[in-house]
Image (cartoon, rainbow, N blue to C red; front, side, top):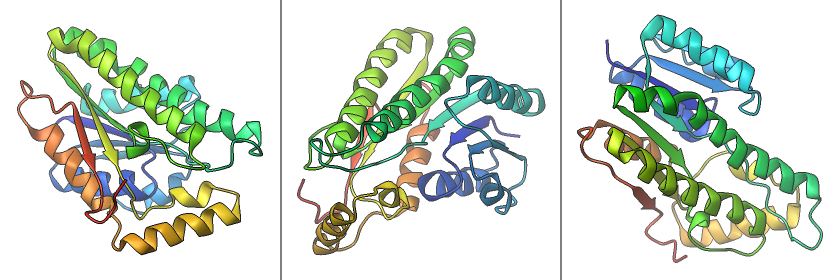
Length: 239
């Protein structure tokens, strides 16, 4: 059996597509999300599905321990869970700011914290953080979302440097517009409509499978090769 991969936010979109692809390659999986029934219906072999809020480190750790007891140590963590709550920074409710900070930064850090030390001790492991092109440049109505994704980039790169001598890889995938449920988190209908119009004008968006293929590429290179960042966007997306 191949090595254990943990995927957060695995109930839809990029997480679901990544789960299907890595399962087809023979990897045992630990799939984590709040909507556990959507992961279970995938019926993937050698897969544990658990309802986990990534901000709850106790249940997060319990799920990892359970999977490691069955499949061995976590070899790869795909930090995919995230929220995008677009809004005008002058009017957006601060609760939405805090939700993005909690999930996109603190949740990601929880996952790293739970697997990194054992990877360093084993001198082997891969962490792939799903960020965004919004972690490289700013967009209107994206202020706090951009801030969280800029944080993902800086945290990822700094940790990569710290653990590189231990043969542990930390990689970032920064997608442009992807056809997922992410936009549905935004509560401002005007902003949603404007985003959809912008997306439609550029033509075909990326698919979740496109991003899953990038995960596959990064992870299955030799351990001695670390792809630090993949910035991937639709050809017609100018920004």
